[in-house]
Image 1 (cartoon, rainbow, N blue to C red):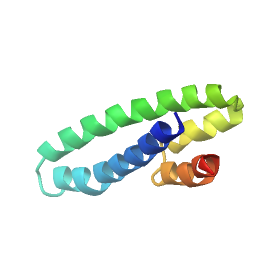
Image 2: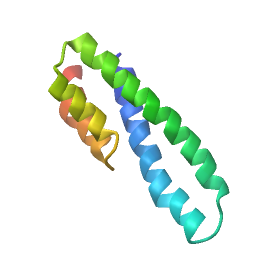
Image 3: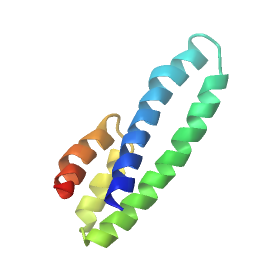
Image 4: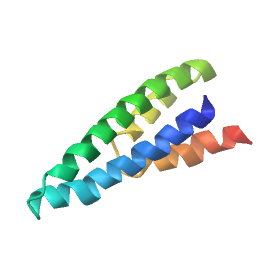
Length: 94
C-alpha cells in the first residue's frame, strides 16, 4: 500500500504541474485546447485516486484526522504531494 500511495502522490503532483505549466498556457495563450483535455482527465483520475488512497492509507496506519487533512490539502497545492512523499512516506520505507 505504501508504494502505491507514494507512486500515486508523485504522479498526481506531476500531472498537477503539467496541467498548470503546459496545459493552461497552451489553452489560454496559444489557443490550443486539446492537450488540456487529456492532461485534465489524467489529473482528475490521479487526484481522485490520491484522495481515496490517502483516506485508506490513513485508516490503515491509524493516523489521526490532522494528518489525513494534511494529506488531502496537499492534493490542492502545487509541489505539496512531493513534500508529503518525502516527509511522511519515505521514512516509512526505511
